[in-house]
Image (tube, rainbow, N blue to C red):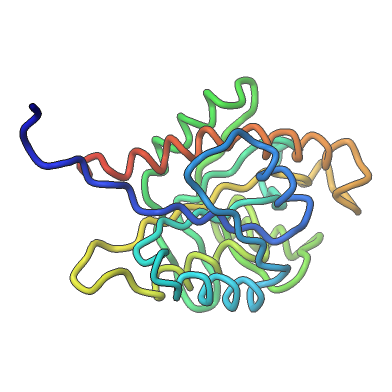
Length: 218
C-alpha cells in the first residue's frame, strides 16, 4: 500500500521547427513524450501554426521548445555548434526562456565535443547576410533565425489554464553558418549535414529539460 498523492504529470511538450529536413531529424530520434510541429518558414507561419496547435485542449499548458537551424553571429562559431537562447527577441519585444543552464548542460552531454553557446537569439523575417549580421551582433544577439522568436512570443500569449503557471518555453538552434562559414544551401554542404546529425542527437536533452519542469524552481 502506498501513501501520498500521485506524482504530477509533466505538461505536454511541443517541439516546433520550420523545415522538412529539421522535422526529419527530430522524427529520427529515440521515442519520447513529445510532439513535433512543422510550422513552415517565417515568423507569420510560425505564429499561425503554433497558435492553432496550442488552442487544442490537450495541449493546454504545454511546454514549447523552438528548434532547428540558425545563423551564428559571433566570430569563432562553427557549423554544428549549438545556441541555447537565454531570451528571444523580435520587434514586438523579448521573451525569457526557462531552464537554460540545465538545458545547456544536457546538450553538452548529448553531443560531447560540440560547443554550446548561451545568449540572446534574435528573430528576422528574412535571411540575414553581411552587414546586417554585424548590426545584430552589435546589439548583443549571438544567433538569428526566422521562427524562434515568433514561436515563443505566440506560445507565451496563447495562455495556460486559468490561474495556472506560466507556459515554459525554450529555444535551441544548431548553427549551419557563421561569419567564417557562410553557407548557401543547407542540404548540399558539409555544414548542413553536420547540423542535421547534431539536431538528431539532441532529443534526449530536450526530454531532460522537459522532465526538469516538474522540479521546484530555484
